[in-house]
Length: 106
Image 1 (cartoon, helix red, strand yellow):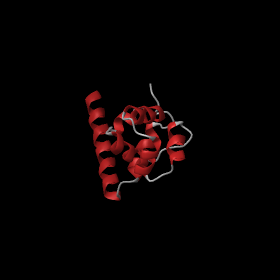
Image 2 (cartoon, helix red, strand yellow):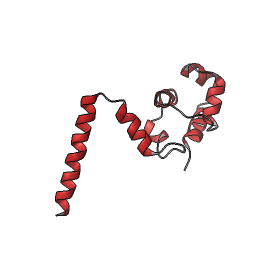
Image 3 (tube, one colour):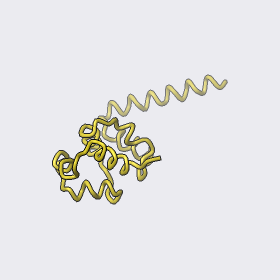
Image 4 (cartoon, one colour):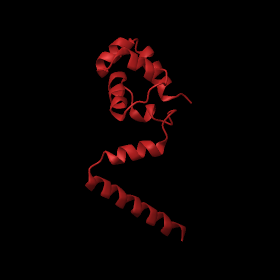
């Protein structure tokens, strides 16, 4: 399975975009793009969203078990970015789903 970093590098190459162009779109230096593509720098959620916009990719494609990320970290980071009321709604939905699964088993 390809890593996040190789997916980003391949997507840029397939679109014939230079690292300089991508860096300008991201508002970072070319060395940052190079470090990301080499797997020497972590990628923030905002950067992933920007890469998706630039490359026309979905975040689910990029984050499908990317090397260096585990799903729990992604879920936690995303959950923590939500407002409190949305967090409470999600927790309620999780509780409901767990209760439904429990009832199914009995």
